[in-house]
Structures are given as structure tokens and as C-alpha cells.
Image 1 (cartoon, helix red, strand yellow):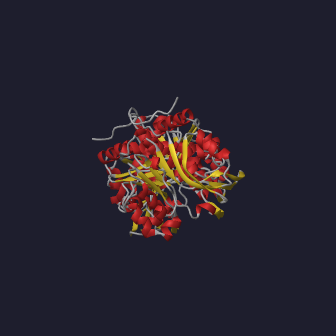
Image 2: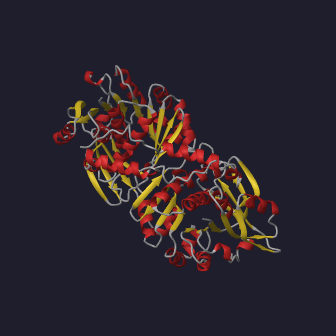
Image 3: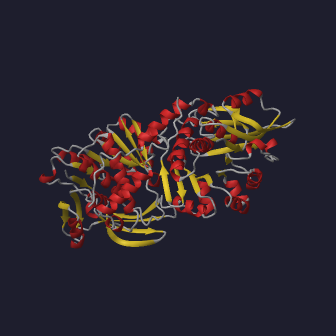
Length: 310
Length: 310
């Protein structure tokens, strides 16, 4: 089973306390695709300008990412973003945004992408996200990302989109804003009532929370002493999660839990290099190794558990 | 094996967004003892005034807590604390502190407590904590709690104490202050170099991190939709952790990991009632049930894990 992703393709300029990089390959669809491609085939839908170099296309293609859905606007310029992280890497300031060809992006889903694939709608206007859903013949699993901008400016469009999706992935602050609730468990339950079967709340270095019909599952992050650049970590997390789900061809709670663990491990690679360098440093073997390390870390075994009752 | 705890016994007045309570039984030694007593025998060292009622003693005794080490200062008044929690329950303001008999507390360890027990030094001056260590003949495991006040005002005394303890338990802000490092993984490593074999960093609703000689273990909290009153959660966590360790009569990493999980589950009860009501609502059967639920929550199994390599 393939994963189809619709999102941004960008040039990112990033500053962190340890370094900086200019106009490097980025964007939600790129980070997601590179992560998901570690698990299986990915089909990308996005838009770039004629300034988007062949080497970037070659890189994506070489990772098994289908670019039939990557539109090029002749004479247009690719989306540019720049941002700066501060000492604790938890907060970032956006320094500039040039939407360029992304501003009027109307995703066109190639016929070959439309049936039977898991779909990820990267952060974007809920109206655009809904237009993608309208074009799909059949997507067994629809996962959506969003951000504070859309919660604040397009809440009713977002809420009607949520009635059509299986899983919403968002961060803690966004969950609190969308639900008007500080407690993350309650926030997940409120958002679930808006439609999605699952809500996955990303908590950065504090892991993630899955809100499902029967309760909640909380999983830790992988402890990292060195974070080079967290840009794209959320999309890498989603890419790893959807990649693992598509490999399992399943979307029940047990599969989702294991897939969130895969997403967690995938995102840890993303944080360890600037731009896409972190995720490019991963291969299947390294990923599998780190997953085993993560599984072992949270495995409580059974032998050493003192029985208390009766 | 018993657990010996040295710490405060207090009357707490607590305000939260959902309610308030006046002069209820509290203090680090009380919260710790009630939690640890769910696992086995506890011996308490503390001080109260003559205003400390017999019903509180009876309650503690009825839970198997030995009060030979609870000193009463005739004519003195028991330590009083009052505080207020805000909407997200993560932050609290101390409204007033009356140290009373706790101000000149010089812990005297009864002879019967001195040998072969696991020791918990609740938050207090590192000089006082060291004086307790001096009185012990043999404590196979010494666990210490501290707070920002001592890090700021008695750093050198704290650092020399840390050379004599096995495990330091503290929260994220305190770890950052003590290590001058924002990254929690690095902070744990720096503190470990000050002496303790293990550093357990409490992250509240985000779980906890164990820093050990070979790396880190991160475990999530139990997701709670309703938090009535977090007062004493940190001490209940430590009490559950040490209770489980003493039951296992072991302090290797695997035992510690499982014990941190028990501490996490124990603390979740503490948060669900005002003062000590939360922990008093737990019994061994309920604790065991919730532990199984926690273990299942983070169990990734093996069946549904997609193998990626080679």
C-alpha cells in the first residue's frame, strides 16, 4: 500500500543556537515523504517554482518518492520560510514567509494516486485539504495536520473537514486552542467528538498522546542529548507513523500505537541534522535498531513486577 | 525491608480551580509514607507541635507507618503551608509558609531505624539531610529530594551531599537550575557526575526520565482527565518508587525502571483527591489494576512490528 502526501515543498533558512543553514530543501511534504519512504512507496503532491533544482527531484526520486503529483509553475518561485530556534529548542520564531507559488496552490491529485492509498493532508487551509478529499476515490485512512492559523481563521471549515477524517495530528498548543481546554486528555476527547476516530497530540521532547474511543495512550519521546534542528520533526513523526501503518495495512489501535512509536523514532533522526540531513542519515537498519532500543526502553517486562494484590 | 523517610509533617491549605481545603494533613514525609505503605512497612522521622491531633497519628499507624521517629514539641505548632494552583495545574503559588517547629528540626533517627533500610531524605536543607546520613549505620539505598531554594542558597552543601547518595529525585526546573542546562538529558548526565548513580527527573504530566550510567530511560505519566490537587504528587511518586524497590530488595536499573512505573501509578492516585484523600482512596488491588493498565498502555508487543531491515 502507498502513502499519498499533499503539502508544502520549500526552501528553508534555519538558525539555531548551534548553527544555521540557508535555502535548504524543506516543507511538510518533503519531510513527511523522506520519513515515510523508509517504510515503503510514497506519492507526493505539491507545487514548486522553476527555481526548484533537478538535484532535489533526483534526491526525492532516489528514495522511492513518486513526483507525478509535483506541479511546477513556470516562472514562479518556490515557497520560502525562515525561522530561528532559541536555547531550549522548544520555541521558534518565524522570521519570514514567502508563499510564492504555494499561495494559489490548488492540489491536483493524479489519477494513479486516487484509489486505495493512505492519505496525509499536511498543514494547509482546511478548504484546500477538503478539495483533496473530494478528488480521492477511496482512501482507507485519512490523516490531517493543522496549525493555529487555521484554528483561528477557518474554524468552521476545519470542523467540517474533521467530520471526514480518521486521524488528526496536532501539537499540544494547537490541541488546547482547538478544544479550549488546557488538560491534554480532555482536549483529545473534545477534538475526537468533532469527528476523527483518533487524535494524536504531539508533545515534542515529551512524547505523544493518542486519544481513541476507549481512552488514551501516552508514549515518551526518545531522550536526545543533542538536537541540531527540530524543523520537520512533526512531519517526520507523521511520515514514520503513516509509513508504519501502511506497512501493517491496518489502522486499529494496536497498529496505531506501534506506528506512533515508529514515528517517534523516525522523528528523532530528523532532529539530529539541519534541514533534511537528519532524516537522510537514517536507513532501514539504523531505524530498526533504534526502534528496538526504544521498545526495550519502555518494556517493563513481567519478571520483576512485585505483585501487590490481594 | 523497611523504608525510612525523613521529612516534613504539615497542615496544608490548598486552593485549586475546582475547590479548596484548609489545614489538611500534608507534608513530604506524610505523602511519601502513605504511598510507600501500600508496598510495605515504613518508618517516619519528622516533627509536629502539640496541635497535631491523635486522629492523624492513628491514620498513619493504621497504614503500617511506624511513628517512633515522629517527635512532638510540647507547646509548639506544626508546620503550615498554603498554596494555590492555576488553571493548568502545572504552576502553583505559595501563599504562606509558617515553619514553626520544623524551623529548628534536628532529625533524630531511632536506633531501630538505623540499619539495613532504604532511606528517603525528603526535601530539606542539605545540612540536615547530611546529619541524617551521619546517624545511619547502614542504608543499602539512599534517595534524596531537593528544591530550588537549596540549589540557590546551599549549593556546595548540596553538592557534597550528592557524593554520598545513590539516587537524586528532582523536577525538570530544578534539574535545569542545578546543572545550568536546559536539555533534560544533558542535565541528568551533569547531575550524575556530581555523585548519584541515578537521577530521576520528574516531569509532572509528562512522565519522568531516569538518567543512569549507561544512558536514559523515559517513561510517560498515566493520562489523567481530572486532576483535583497535585500537592504531594512528587512525594507519592518517590514513595511508590521506593516502596516498590524495597519490595524487590534491589536497586539495579531494571528494578528502578519498574519502580518508577509504580511511582507513576501511585502518584496518579494522589492527584485525584484533595490533600491525602487521593492516596487514601488507593489500596493494593486498585494499585495493581492501574499498574497493569499502565504496563499494557506502553507495551508495544512484538507481533505487529513491521520489520524494516535488512
